[in-house]
Image 1: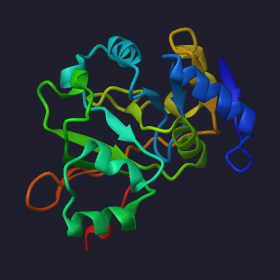
Image 2 (image 1 turned 45 degrees about the vertical axis):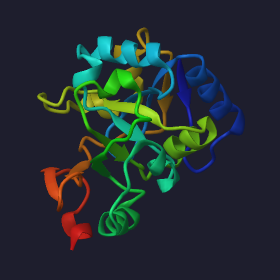
Image 3 (image 1 turned 60 degrees about the vertical axis):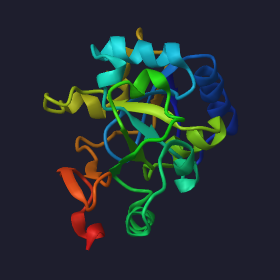
Length: 207
C-alpha cells in the first residue's frame, strides 16, 4: 500500500493508520533525511524477523538502527552516555548521523545475542519523527540497499520502491524523493569518537 504524505502538512489520520500497522506487527518503508528505510516497531519480534528474512540476514548479526523521535528514548536502550558524547549528539541531532553506543539489557534479546552496542538515529525528517513519536517507542530500521552494494537511483523514488517492494511490506510511505547518500556513522562506544562511515553528515560536529 502506497501512502502519500506531505512533510509540511502531515495528516493525523494517515499517521494513525501507519502506527496501527506497526503496532499490529507490520513493516513499512518510510522516508528519512538520508535514504528510504525499512522499519518496524521495536517490540514486534515477528516483524523484526520479517525484515531480516527480506534482507537475508540473521537478527543477531544485523546492523539495525534504533530510530527515535528525540533523545529522550536513549536511556531506555543504552548505558550511561558520557557528557562529551551527549553534547555532540545534541548538536548533531536531528540529522543524518548514526551514533553507536553501548547497549543495555532493554535491547530486544533477538538483536543482542552477539552485540554489545546499538546504533541510534534521530533523522531530520518530520514524517519519520511523527511516526516514532506517535508510536511511543523507537523503530528498528535498516536501509533498503545492502551495505556492500551501491545505492541505486530507484531507491530514492517512492513509486518505484513501491513497485519493487509493495508486495512484501505492509506500507510504503511516499514522502517525496529521498536521498541517495547514507548517514555518517560515529562509534562512541569506546574512549573517543571513531568515524565508521562518512556519509551525509558533516564531521564538523565532532570539533
